[in-house]
Image (tube, rainbow, N blue to C red; front, side, top):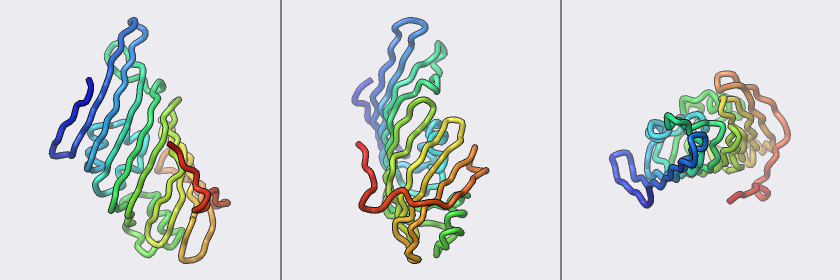
Length: 206
């Protein structure tokens, strides 16, 4: 399936895919999916795996542009064998808000955000790679409230995670790091540490 496009009330979509049956024990599929001007709720409805890969996604309100491309082994019932997924993902959006999220509420409290109920984000671009049951989220910059933050992390398919947040700019002139980990987002452990990133030294990936 190539060069498939659609315009719906959920946003614009582009899609390419392949299905390969070499033997009964060697079944493979791959796809490239692009979504434009779509809400996080609808991204998760179309791709339930997105909620597993990025559980914080549903906390963002506003329109997103998403790109995902991956290959995976499948079984004879056409189910994806999750550990075999290899892929890349990019999610970006402008004029977003973050609310109703335990991580945001904890950050707002610890960093003394001006607005502790909702965070406004002018622009966000999150990219990562998926392999061996793990999504590695590349470092990216997020401006929220009066802060500029550098973030990166690892999200496992079993919902466990390790994230790092570097405070790049703050009204209190703080230069610190927060390491966040846990088996899920209902059980978070916070540890203060050294900031891994500075604005001029944020690594970039293609």
